[in-house]
Length: 110
Ligand code: FES
Image 1 (cartoon, rainbow, N blue to C red):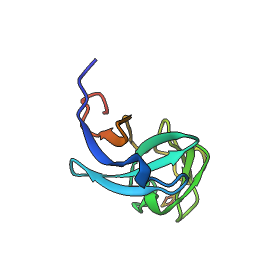
Image 2: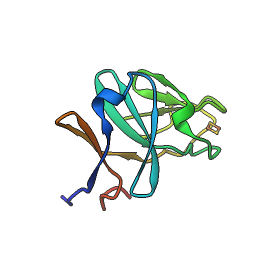
Image 3: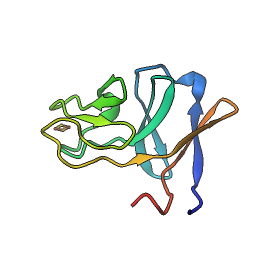
Image 4: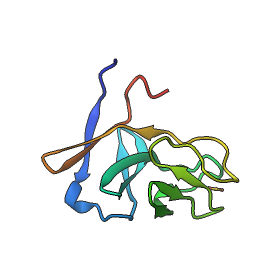
């Protein structure tokens, strides 16, 4: 187990269910998503075409890229549909005292 470096991102109250919110954590641009009562953090860049996933649509626990429609599992980052075939990094999230924290620098994220 390696320590994770959680950084505050936003207030939980700032998140709207099903609407991705773009944020920068330790130099990494991420999309933070509240859906199904859980908060997820995924790298903002689609693995297929270098566009912002935060501008995509949420469908349950998946985030759909707006450009070509690949869906990525918010729990694993794996693509659920073509044309993307490579996963997008996802990051640990915790919510404490109404604040959302995300760890993008954990050494076990490689
Ligand atoms: S750029 Fe995201 S699926 Fe093509």
